Length: 319
Ligand code: ADP
Ligand code: X2W
Image (cartoon, rainbow, N blue to C red; front, side, top):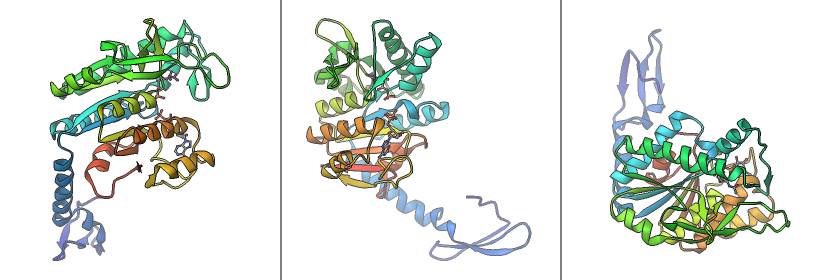
């Protein structure tokens, strides 16, 4: 909103103002309602109410590959997580990195093949997947967070046996290679870090009982971590405004229950990557997580806007 007017007169209840533009024209401008002192006061009270309610609660945030492509968004994300920590929440970050993996494999002359949204991961590609997720994406996030003194600790599911996993057997019979599903999350290890004031930043690599690394869909890891920790909130940051009535142009579904989500899956309204998220959301709700949010990670600070305002900005799913 451009407020650089020559002359401004705001009415008594701060809902509109009379402006005189540089060209001499005088006009009424109602946009001031959104920037008025009264509006700011009510917004602050609203935010403080939520901040007080969430103090000490665990919030697991999944930062999706598609939403982490721009440096400015990474900075805004790091700022949000740091703020959450500083106002007393206990954030836990689980990240993806699929587009970055695909790009790196391409540079090495390897084509990515997906079955039902999962990357076939053979013995040659597994080290590349691990290098990108645990070496690059994870450490980049940790550095951004710790530049703001967030107390971030980068981990893969191998560290402290954080994510015990087993190889996935896909229904189609196709061998996906080194692709896993979560068996168990080491809750005590995470709680130790949270109690110490650290922010765990987790890459979606699990550890099989025989010591093999397995690549896991990051949405599923976030859900399992949220359930293990008894998180109050699970937040998915992705590359769309939230769960849509239909993809790509349907309306945003602001609020829905688990049965609504199941129905949308059954009617085929939810496909692609969102299908995995929907299953992960249902597992989280059934596992005791109160509220799951799907937010637009392409817009800065959506986490703050969703958590600390009445109206929110994305999709909310409850049991
Ligand atoms: P991320 O990498 O952020 O985890 P995914 O690609 O896994 O994101 O999932 C998000 C994608 O799911 C969207 O970009 C969209 O193409 C697809 N999608 C399919 N159906 C829907 C739907 N009903 N609502 C929102 N997104 C949907
Ligand atoms: C994923 C892990 C990363 C991920 C992969 O290789 O791309 C499998 O597909 P996003 O960005 O959240 O999609 N693993 C098995 O899930 O990243």
